[in-house]
Image: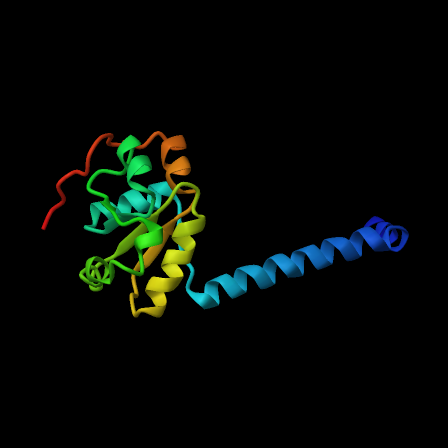
Length: 147
């Protein structure tokens, strides 16, 4: 304990930088939690998908056809506001938004939460993380989804 106090006294700037970093990280996480932005990892997404969650793929049709999650619905992010009919049909269900890296899906989750959706999640890391986890990907045209 004496060595810790001695180190802190000798390296005040390092200790201050550590404390500032810690509090910035804490504030960022608390703000993210308060805003309801919930990102889930691919394995948690699989669990939700097995519990009848709907996957909305926000990528463009070309990226979607190169590989997507089974039964994912393709609603490109740039058409997201235009296709309110497709989106509003999903209101009572759990929804997982997916993009390439997780950036667009975070924005989509925010829009959906503002529209009154409660169970909306973004896939952390997007399709890149899904593929890196070795999870199955379907290629080609859209697959038929249940109901």
